[in-house]
Image (cartoon, rainbow, N blue to C red; front, side):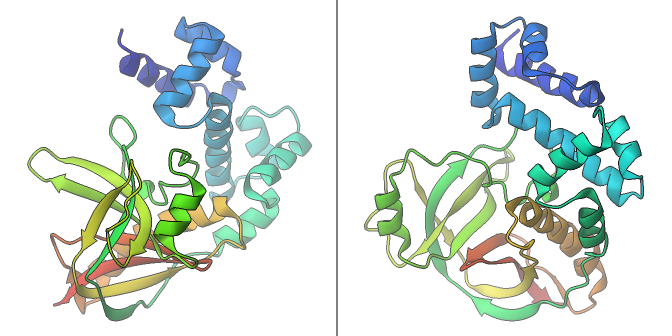
Length: 274
């Protein structure tokens, strides 16, 4: 079995045994790798350590349970925690909120947003080209894909020189070859020129267009909540606003993107009038 198939088998095993309180040691044994080799292979394949992946997946399912109306004690038992207090502590470490606070804040956060419509571009950004997750996945669930990724191969000094003191950073799924379906996630700052491009980064050009700009709730400074709000906003835009707004449609062939600047986040969709 090749490396990719082996890791996909591990990920499928994790998803089907999340309630069993899996450990990294158990996963290493299941993989038939040594513990060291497994940890290195898993981090290389997914971009994050196995323990972090386990914790994140368990918390994601617990959060969905809470928003579905399940009691905290029932969620704790269903998700492999020995006690409600242990679950509450783990949940707070991950989300920065207690289960009750999370249900109150996120349960009331149904998006109903009227975007601003304004011209933007053309502009160029220079940044990282990130490979998509392996296997099938929903792009609307993969917003803010830059979070938790490693960007250490470009020095902080070079990035500051490229981005400037108050950068506007862009996150976008780019599909350069529509025939093959190949695509990647781009993350980097808008630049005035491309005279300086650090090794390992690539330029991406964005066309001028009218954009519907949707502000994303900041999540009280909590990056995990911001990540969820970005994903929820993408779904709101494509599952509710675009089909129902009655005035605009998506401008096909142009790039939708996330915009991060000065602590504010927005999602920008090129649109045309109906």
